[in-house]
Picture 1 (cartoon, rainbow, N blue to C red):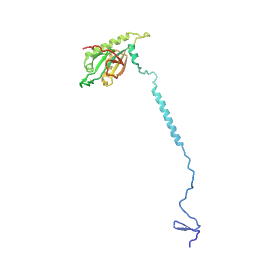
Picture 2: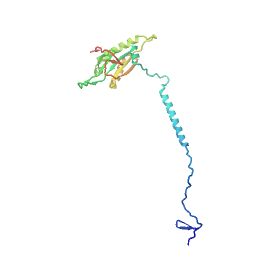
Picture 3: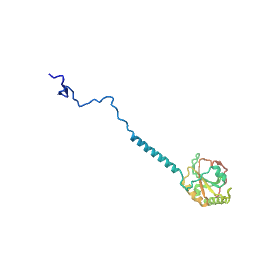
Picture 4: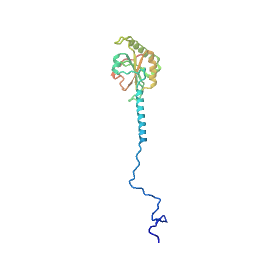
Length: 212
């Protein structure tokens, strides 16, 4: 007979009446380890420094370097009322909605919208270029002879209004061309309307053709 003070463990009888097991039961309600947030604080600190650095760099980029003169802007009323600006409008070729024909682009001169000629003629016809250059030089000299309220000679400027669909090569060609007329400043404006009688939002009357 097996005595009552003998326990069985994995098929073996051990004296002493106790049960030997390789598995231990964890005590209930054991305290969990404390959460360590040191690494999290380090990450947040790095992010904060990074954000502050970026903000300071953006602010520095928006400040112009010392001695640099930024381009000036004018609203349409100031530019027109000053009388110091010469206006030239350039329209890109269009497709006629009714006939489907391709209409050549036009060049209009002055606030009166004097028709200089087509874009193709301006590029190929030297006579048209000479006539337009004479007008630009004449107006530039007249503006230079006038004085402002402080007694200083006015500086002539050229305003080129271009169709938003106009190819860049025409603008480049016109800038090179107008540089011969002694304009110190050249301004640019985009035409957002199909009304060719409009200059900077002000409608003017069309005039006769310049040249042949």
